[in-house]
Length: 437
Image (cartoon, rainbow, N blue to C red; front, side):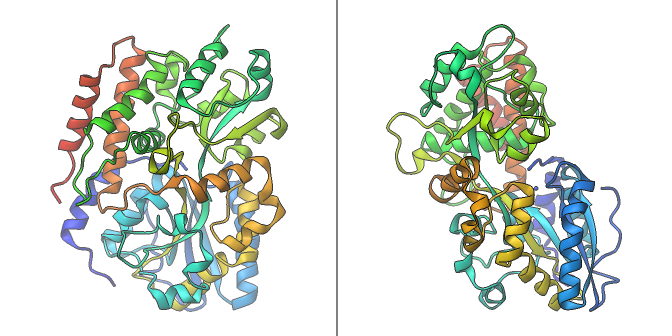
């Protein structure tokens, strides 16, 4: 069993406030206590339209694995609202599953606990080697210079979804490519109770994802090269203010969006209450709301005019990673399961079911991933997406900066002026709450 370092455990205590979106109850003993060579316990994140939908997708695949290996997999689908807390409790107690899904942005934070089995070169070779995975996805599997703490399972990226009919009615024939164009189009589209853009302002994960992308576009990071927080740098302040201003100063997003936290912005877009949406792999969700694929287009998130290099970042690297719990008593079975789940055939099946992008390059060749939506998002993932900071305190960064943005959006929604000094003050307060190490 790995030792949970005290410093790392203290750092992660603050992460209990984080509520994730994209990757319940008390934890039953899993791999750390009652696992056997013939069984595995698997905690899967909620990827589908419901927990039951995930079971419908996964259970036939788990039976396929059992037929191939003789190993039975006990499945538990864990809601995103509970997943990180469950993982942290397992990391502290040593009682958890054999294999688990993690949000890829948590990789470095969970890696710091020592609770996940590292994927060194020999272990990665069992899955076919690191060359099988999209580099951007593998870069979001742990801190730089260390063996990955997990391997990519499902990949996603943000895109700008736009309503073709509403754009045509407003005399606009294409998606905006720059932020100046997005604001101008948004104002034309904001009319008669409809808004140009929907945002999910009460969702701290969505907030921090957009703040990160915009900070990159402003030439800033939320951490300096030594890993120290730099939340209130001029570029970070400008990025957060720009995002908040979409609801405040520019008024192209509804004031009520400041409270959205449960995919309401997707619903607003699907039902025509908003003409644009910044989201990751929204197609399956939009379909569930009755919106046909031909009704919308997908383009990269706008960038500043003339932006190149990292200033042309259009998304964080979104996705789900697959990890092996370090305390498992069935390491061999767990690694066989990881190899199965990351195999080309299984990657094709699972990512088709969830409308996500396979991080295994060979699986991307399937025509199912060449749709206009997924083709655009795959290009973003491969060319203009960057991983969130892979530092031990990443979970706290998400919680604190995402909450700061939430607070600022709430102020804007209440009609209060959100100034540069106000943004800087909120981000400074967030930085002061970061752990010392």
